[in-house]
Image (cartoon, rainbow, N blue to C red; front, side):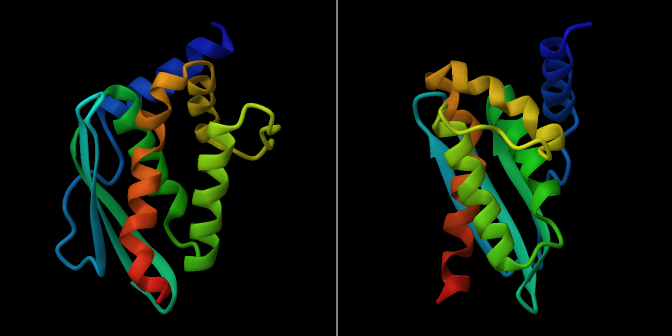
Length: 142
């Protein structure tokens, strides 16, 4: 089995059984995001307590890359401080967008999303949840 096959399996698994899928009734922030080119539509729910991201979930419909990325994001950002979660989100969006950036060795399952760097048309699918997370927490920074 090749590394590419493993990454594809990770993305398919997160698409079929996404982590933290569902609305959050006690969310402190939420935002809606869509990608009209692909038809992806998601809502990100975030619960912040004492400047820490306590929970992140999502709802919506999207392509396999969008759902897998959303699932991976929810697990990645939980329990980070708000500044750390914001920084990690911005750095990950930049990593996917700029092929000249060397990927760090500590990405874990997020590394499976690096394949979209070869397909610029899929970049919005992979980053929609991350951009929507930033939109959701924008008020938390005020």
